Image 1 (spheres, rainbow, N blue to C red):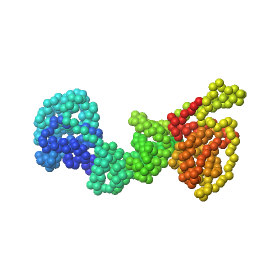
Image 2 (image 1 turned 90 degrees about the vertical axis):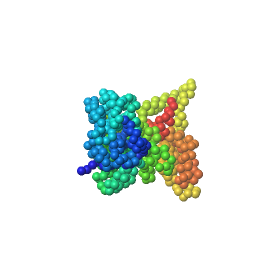
Image 3 (image 1 turned 30 degrees about the vertical axis):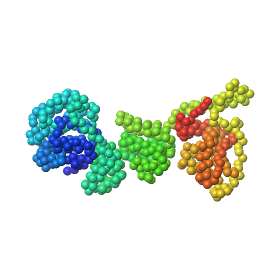
Image 4 (image 1 turned 180 degrees about the vertical axis):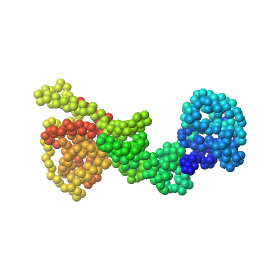
Length: 534
Ligand SMILES: [Zn+2]
């Protein structure tokens, strides 16, 4: 008959227990010294060894030949308790038997001394689930327990226990297992079962189990059936988690604000039967890795990511601003919480995707832009008619270009570079590529410009009407220096850079472009850095 791994591998002695060293040491000492308490309280989240420790302790204190505090496993008492046939040991799960009659029944039997062993032991699991009346009945017994009586209460939520109970128990807090403790134990289990597993696969299980050994063994169980050698793929299939490639595609769609593509990917996810909550958890981890790679210095390792994947994370991270990533992580965590209550997990995920694709508060800026354009027109009309405002109306700081637009600079003759044999246009293009990687925030505005030619060590970029805001931005000394450095890196020598505005007839699409340029600015520098002065 097949038995679940966590049953097969349930420790039978303190020595076999994984971790929880301090607790194990104390309990062992109590067994050896014979100083047994009347009531123990084992607290801790699921799968941290509470029930196992309770059973080991039960057998140890009744064992005829305990060895170093461990039950021998051979004597009559050990064997009877082990088989579940002992009348001296009761195990009850308060989650399923919280009725007061049941606990009263149990407590009535307290008066009968143990038939075989030294101690009569009641193990009450999930004790916080007992009703108030049941707690009161239990409390009475705890106040004056017979010499032979031992209670072992276990709970995942000790804060729900009445103080009167807490104060009568010796309390032990079982911590969650570390990922190393879990993967180490899984490795032992796999080896002893004659199977094989990739270390990455076991690490992945350990991460997913979040400190619970029972969950880890259950996941391992699901993977064991899949093949001789357990791989990351098996674990992903067992957990129902999406693979990295899918996470990258989904993040890409959001980065480009392609809502249609994002919804298509969600459709794909749903068709493959994935769980929305699990996916949101994975995606939240993906976003956090992106954030980490934005913040990490070059060469620093990302936790749990190989070198080759680290580059993919960094490349994708550069598609986002820090502010945007932060906002998406926040949205993702809220969506994950929402799936617990929402009737349709899918719509939670879809709304999350759409929110991520949204331009933040685009409409406010559009409205401001319109008002700005109107005011400027009025001002120009007034000036044309010879009327001057009593106090000068400040112009938009970025609009330094005088109106009407200056004549287009004459195209310059291309003079070849003195040192490097590279054509200036190639130097320019390479510098753009260089900046796209190293200074994405600069590349944005620069990519709006047209290559304006090279002459005597000066590279020029021409900005179309309506794009002057980018020209002004790039004219700032520190930004200019960065562009000049890029030109130098790409074989341009000690070059200077000059952003110019290109005089040309009014562009019918100017309005649209202005709108785009402003939202581009906000994307690049964050909302709080872009200020529009009226
Ligand atoms: Zn024994």
